Amino acid sequence: MNEQTAVSRADDQATLEQPALLPPVDVIEDDSGITLYADLPGVPKDKLSVQADGETLIIDGEMALEMPKDLEATHVEVNLPRYRRVFSLSKELDPGKLSAELKQGVLKLRIQKAERARPRRIEVTG
Amino acid sequence: MELSLFPRDLFAELDRLQRQVQRAFEFSPSIRGFARGGFPALNVASTPQSVEIYAFAPGLEPTSIEVQLERGVLSMAGERKPALPGERERTTVHVNERFAGRFHRVVTLSDDLDPNEVRAAYREGVLHVSIKRLESAQPRRITVN
Image (cartoon, rainbow over all chains, first blue to last red; front, side, top):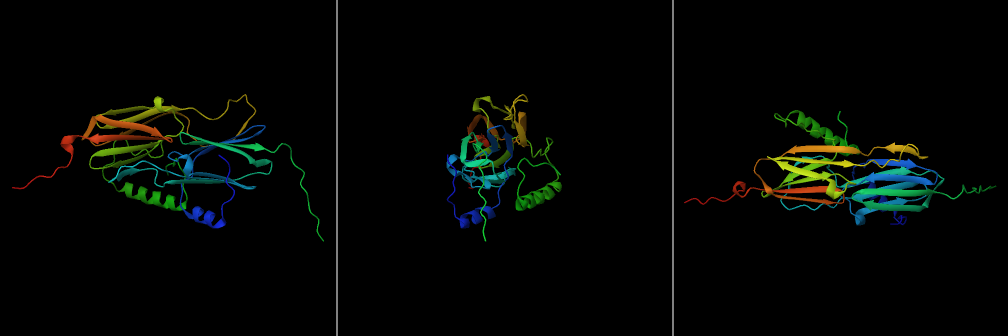
């Protein structure tokens, strides 16, 4: 799965306003990059969105549980059908080198560090 | 204040608080307590014909999950391997929130269930156990003469 960058601001706003569960994560860094695991039980691949731009990483997933009709809840611990978590990315990470894998409700994200710290061009005006 | 497995946003927290308050006024909680916040998180629902249990247990091997139903008590057990690397590797763990290790959760259900009519499926990290009620316990219309 690739990152999704072409999302309009209006969509973002609408999504961000919906209440969502905060999924637990593990974040592990090694020499070449960062690995993130997120628990998203009940979310199928097509209902998961991982967006990364230069500064933020947004994980958003909607559950799709198979439910019989006439269901009446008697004990509820997971009370929202959506997960969302936002992280800010630091500069040495390359959002273009992001891979994601969803298996049995666990998302594994891998973000590589940039090959070398690219020199930043500073524009001088005036 | 109990720990929540899924920390939520403000509205969800308010909702949870409301439920906690409601619970405090319930007269007869189960002897096994509510044990919310354990792993896996559980949702239980019922229909006139069956009881449906959803256990939110991502990242397991389906065959390694032990599900048992005995006299209306359902127990689910298994183990989740940690995703964290060994100490010798050159890594830094920045966040460690996910559950790892053995788990065992028990839920008391009603006693009108048929132990021979249990289906369990594990999909997208959710264990769904569906138990049919006994034929004799299902509501039926009684004709009045």
